[in-house]
Image 1: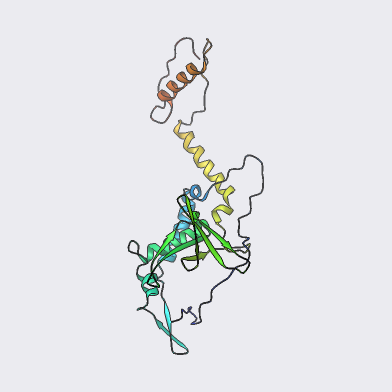
Image 2 (image 1 turned 120 degrees about the vertical axis):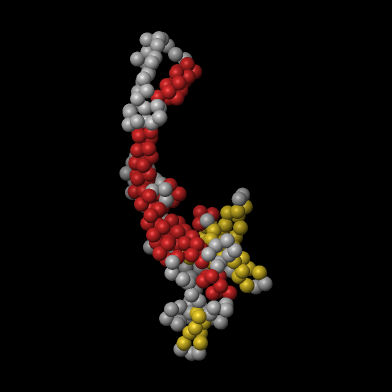
Length: 251
């Protein structure tokens, strides 16, 4: 049996040259730049909504596998293992919708999705999406790919026989796609910084920091104790507008 695309043509395997798919660094604008990781970026509501919209929309479309029926026709290959895995259920824990959702989310966030094949008796029995942050793609001079997978303190080197690699956009070429979140890490970092600042600002009742001035000299331990007491009594929304009382001539 041969796999066919929607046009009825045989599916060909892509090969890649030397990896040049590392996202370039942002323009250096000085030490004030804030870079966000993909994990931080996905915490932004707009980013999460965009990723989920794309992932849910694609996952809602069923994956169908066809086989050739004669020279010019094709038919659904419902009895094949490929159809059962991709259309019905890729593993015991996930539906096909959840599986495709994970694949697309990984591509949108990291630029790549890596699917581990569980093989038994020469046939793929399960498909599971790996965390893209644990996988590094290597390509030799002939374009052959290997995948270094972090497994705790160990690193396993797998081939395309064990890993199905779904590559995202690679505008610079290379064996792996570029993470959109990494590519725009400075822009997203600014949004993360604004969100973090706003949280701290309103948690302190939008009150700027202050200085407690004591008439006598304090050692480091005494100053820390007084500062901690003040913070426990007056910091945060719950303690907002509480009356402050300080003795010993403190300002």
